[in-house]
Amino acid sequence: MMTLQNLIMFSVLALFVFTISMNPPNVFAQEYDFVAGIHSEITFEFRDGTETVEFPVFSTTSDIVENVGTTFQVEGVVGKTPLLHKALDESFVHRLSRLTAGSSFEYDYRFFDATVNVKQNDVILKTLQYRHCEIIDYGITTLSDDYESYMASNTGFAVVDRIDFQCGGVHIDTDKPKTYTREKTFVDSGSLPFALAEDVRTFLTFEFDSGTEKIESVIFTLTDGYDETSDGSAGFQIITAVLPHALIDDAINTSSKVSGLPGSFNEDFNVNVDFVNSQELLRGMDFHDCIVSGYDIVTLRDVEEGYTGKRGFATAEILDVDCSGLKPEIPTHDETSTQSKFFEPAPITYNMGHGPTVSSIFDFESGIEEISFTEFYQGNLAARANPTIQLVKVLGGTPLLYDAADHTREIGVKSTGVSNLAELFDVKILLSYEDTIVRGFDYSKCRIVDYMIKTEHDADESFYKGFALTDEFYLECEGYHPFNPMYEEMEKVEKANSISSKEWQAGQRSSWSEAFRAS
Image (cartoon, rainbow, N blue to C red; front, side, top):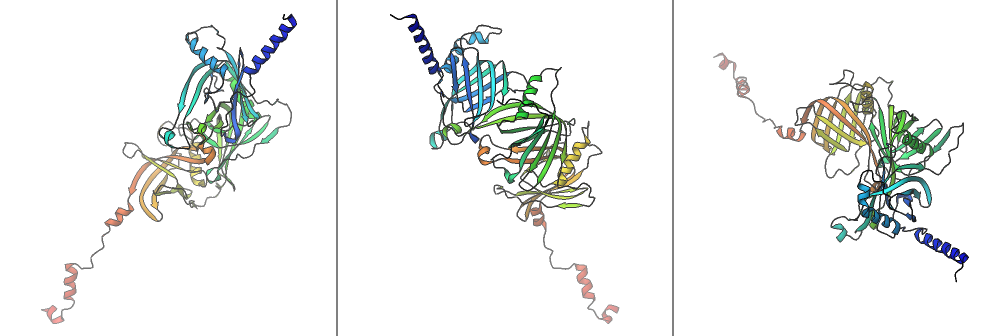
């Protein structure tokens, strides 16, 4: 006969065995190629137990700072996750309760908490604590690369769960206690181990009241600052590997807390951005009075390639920053010199696909600058509007062109037409094969209408192969004249070695005798 004591011991043992079965130390961990070993581990806290899952893909689908909702998405191969699958099944059974506006019916697996640990190998880098979550969409899908999945040995198929969650809120916890000190701290995170074209890198120094943090970002985009319709504000976006940055993370949390509250004040900061190569500072920008305007964490991948082993997964964070203004810096340009300058271009060493190289000659008041570009786009040639040009190259080496772009920014926004303060210049574009020019264009009275700094990249592949930090110049010109050197050569006809009839008659008369001329 079972005594009360034995019954209690049996119940405790049964509960212990149930808890172990529902909370294995690692429910489903697959060996994938994660860039820098950074991946996401998610712990779901249901009413019936806790389940930890390592999803290869985790992405926030609503901006953490903007406060327009709290949603995220996960993706991974269908695995041994009984509690999560139970929540998916109940979400379908009770879908009408969830879709009915104002429904308060709570089934067992409707609401739960989720803790997302972004880890580098076994070290937790950042923790996102989601509260009061529910499943809003899900499905099983198959990722493939069309016919190559059937034919190629290095790719295939991936049958995955894709689940969308909506939560009541989220908090970023860096797992580092905040310490208050009168002395300002300085933390330099150093360089990242990724390749960049011509080794042109972006370093950002964030200056807060409590200290300074310096980081490198592999992807940088100047989102505001040089458009001629801009109001003088500035902004940028960076995408880089997820790493703990205490002061920056505090700024993210602060912006998230005050977002949508008109009576609250945010803490501003300054950011110094240096674009450098291994030898020198190429360009600088000092952003002042900035706030964090957006923050996301995303997993970059190319369809099924991360699952099949052809490629991998790159977990990155996206940080948007808005500023009151910026002060650009051109370290190689001496503004005090009044002498005319001439800058020669660096040769193009990229594969141009059997096509011509693009070179240019800019004629400014301060001098002449020859520049080689990798990309050239024409616009408005068949329209009733001024012709436009877009030119792209790797950042650096064009101080006079930078100075023209900075001068345009200083003029400020204008209502219509060309400001009388804008410096107009001429541009000659040459398309050539080595020393042979096959096409050319003369643009006159040009001005810069926009300028961007932008990193060219391709999802996760760039983390393996590299990035390219580029200058993008947008020009509008009043005059345009194309020239065709090869056709002009064809039109040149060699003159015949002959004389006119008058010249022949004059020559004949000169041989006559005096008697004959007198007669």
